[in-house]
Amino acid sequence: MIEKDDPERWKICDKVIETVKEQDIKLVYFQWTDIHGILKSFEINAKRIEDFLQDGEHFDGSSITGYGAIEESDKTAIPDPSTFAIMPWRKEKKVARFICDIYKPDGNRYEGDPRYILQKAVKKASEFGYTYYCAPELEFFVIDTDTEKAFKPGDLRGYFDYDPYDINERMRYRINEYCDAMGIETEAIHHEVAYGQHEVDFKYDKAVTSADNTVTLKTIIKTVAAEDGMIGTFMPKPFAGINGSGMHVHQSMMKDGKNAFYDEKDNNYISMTMKKFIAGQLKHAKAMCAVLSSWPNSYKRLVPGYEAPVYIAWGFRNRSPLIRVPDFSGKPSSARCEIRCPDPAGNPYLQFAVLLATGLEGIISDDIEVPEATDKNVYHFSSKDLEKAGIDALPGSLRQAIIEFRNSEFMKEIFGEEPWKNFYYAKLEEFDAYRINVGQWERDRYIVKL
Image 1 (cartoon, rainbow, N blue to C red):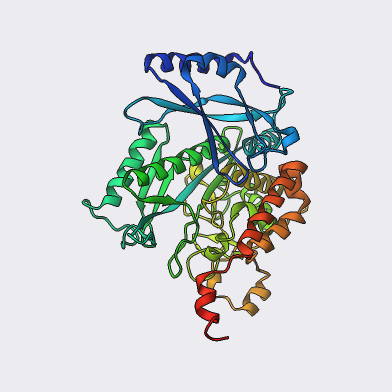
Image 2 (cartoon, rainbow, N blue to C red):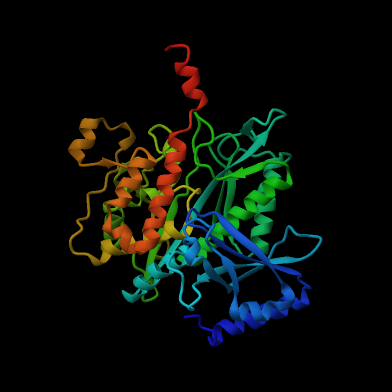
């Protein structure tokens, strides 16, 4: 039920109401994501901010993917006051936003709300004494268009290239400025390997906060690109022949105020808890791949030869396995593992939910064995080498991935039965739309030959 009498919530609400009045804010956006991760929004009149914080606002969810059929369409968006932020790019009139939790008419949470699915995973981890922290590395492309509306990379620079007079460098500065204004602490912003490709890293936090920040950062990036007449895109592989965009996620578990992934007695300073966490994610890697890499285009990134992880293995420092343990110099607070197959096109609430749930299952289960780490470059393994090492590969297409997802009882448990069906059917429809399309590559290759 909606906790209307929560004193802590209302302390934050009172500060929000005061800020709205002091800053003369006219409109406030209520925002949430559909099951694909697409941001949804409507504006409310800030004069009634207190009423909206108390009761939320009703909306029709029947046309939002994953939010129910017409006969069960009524939903209520309740703003989370801790997510209140003023949009810094709205210079002429101040506008703010909330990220919302979605409820049903009876006052209970809507099971298909992706934020709720993550919150459930967080609650389960807390029941075992764990708090999940994560930090995504968000890669993206800035796309330019010529007079013929052909898409092309916004620049021809490469990894860490710097030019103080370049429009993209100024865009990265503005992204950082907007992040600061909206409460996101960035750690690094730089040009990535591919033409027109960039990366923003922000400070790790608890799972829901990191997912909220990811959604916010996507909005910031698209806004900044649009300000300069360009397109900011999280499409994993917009161009052939160059690297695609990933969203490597750094992860750790805290317990009793300490990093549960650290062990000073281990040769590599990593605990059995971390090893079991990794084992849980490797066990379910195929089943959760449809969530972590959720577009048909995602699987054009997940191919050998472009620094994208394909093989289900783990190791230290080496970037070729699916999960790696970065060098953290034996510092207890920095012990973490990094999973490299997620991409920024997906829904971060669902992505972090499956990562947390599968890792937690590895920790609490006695039936999941920890595989040996490999420090060899598995990109160069032959099929025979992979077979001998017992290393499997991720699904090669969204179709294969959604079959793995469909066959996983554990994915159904994480999502809940109805949201699980909603996600599965939505991805089937997406793949069917992709499957019936005929592209230029096919015309170029086959029309004349055949």
